[in-house]
Amino acid sequence: MLKKLLSIGLLLAPLLVVSQTCPRLLNPVAGATNVSVGTTITWQEIIGVPSYNISIGTTPGGRDIISEFAVGTNTSYTPPFGLPDNTEIFVTITLFFFSNQNQNIVCPSISFRTEDVITPPNCTNIRNPANGDTDINLRSNINWKYSPGALSYILSIGTTPGGTDIFGRTNVGNVLTFNPPQDLPINTEIFVSVTPVNENGEAQNCAVESFFTADIAQSLNCTRLISPLDGGTNVPLTPLLEWEEVPGATGYKVTIGTTPFGNEIVKDRIFRSARTFVIDFEPNALLFMTIVPFNELVEATGCIQESFSTAVGCGPFLDPSNGEFVTLFPELDFPVNFTLCENSEPITLSTSVVAETYRWANVTSRGTEIELLSETSEAEISEGGLYRLDVTNFADPNGNNIPCTTSQVFTVEVIPGPNISSIGVERDGDNLRLTVNVSGSSQYDFALNDINGPYQDSNVFTNVPLGDNTVYVRDKNEDGCILAQDVEQDLISEGFPKFFTPNGDGFNDFWQFIPPPNAEDFEILSISIFDRYGRLLSQIGADSIGWNGLFNGRPLPSNDYWYRAIGIDNREFKGHFALRR
Image 1: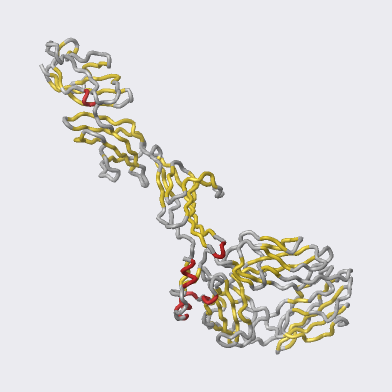
Image 2: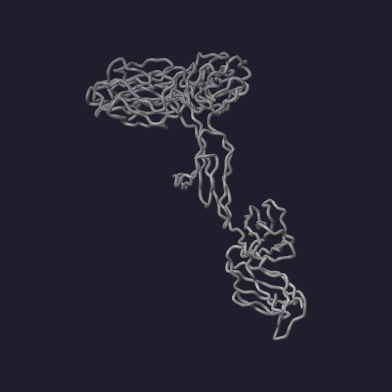
């Protein structure tokens, strides 16, 4: 799939692709009016886009305000100097793909109109150094916060409140940072006044803020990335990050995020050397990195942020032939709950997903693997618990061999099932009569020789042919269990004679069970004999010569009589035979 994507032609009309993938503005919405000049621009997330670039101008596609600023996975951006008032603003979003920059989609510009600012701006505050900070580097720049509506700022710096002995009161333009023309005096309180200005006038009564410089005249330079270089692409997922050493630095404070000034990957991590290995960056991502050298006295200030993009991995990738995103992650649609019937055979679960590897495992509630069950597309589950199925394809950009794994955790619940206590077998002519005796509190139905039925409410089967048979008992409740039990070929029933003639001629005068020669080793414990009304006439054991046709010493007439025999395996056999005189 990856090779296919990298070799797809790019000749389709871009408008077709744009119409399917470009986001809409969420704030301000297209065509909005009277929008604040300090607004934050937000847009719809497009799943699968690894990075967005934003341009802002005063003409369609224009970049005179902001030009192709990379925001990573952020879906919002606040222009650092605000927007001009009473102006139609055009926002252009570019969907940026590191896999092939020819696939980048420049979306149509969306416009709105800003408010007409008719009052002076409000005051602002210094950001760095902050008001009240101490031990500030004597070569520090001074930064302040944007004041909505401001077009420039008047700045003064002195060693007394309102003083101008370091820098006289001057309009420094529409900037948010200022580098003093000379080093600040050491061990001194520095007073700063910043006054926002626009065409309507100056902000009024802005407070003077101050900070204290360090008592040692020492400063550190910033560093820059050596590997990868700023703007580097296709960076390995486990790279060696290396930067220039800074004289006088004893360590480096490192921050890494997926958005400008983000820190969700590394936040102010301290490194004592100018290199480190990073484990498992996400593929196909734009990463932003800031490195600040420091020592026991001071840290570098004004260090710029650098960025690089990682190797393409599992996707999503844009398919320019249809404007859709595709991925190497297998699509796994697998249930999260299964039932296992008590007293039944294990269940076999399978997936129809085509993948390069499979892994079924029993896991804990925290996802820790307990036991590997299978590495094929199916697994046999014999007990309840929590399980996980992992299906994996592999991407191999630059030999990274990246696993693209989709996982599903599922539960197997053991539910009570029917229990066959016995199966009564009666000979009925040349067939059998089976009575299935079930223990359990539910409602059951029954089938013979086919798990799919048909099922019947009666637990009695008649006209069952001799031979091997299987009885199925099904719980009628939803997700009811089905229990199967084989009824072996009824050779034993052949051992019960169909008739006898107790006439004293010495031949066939007694009725008794005679084990058939082809039956397995088997023993009858007891046999009870009844008349047609269910009256017990006699009980005989395996060591008896059999029943002689007498009841209370008197011969019984020719008729049909019934028997019930109990075997050593607790099987029960019922049937009838004829007494002939």
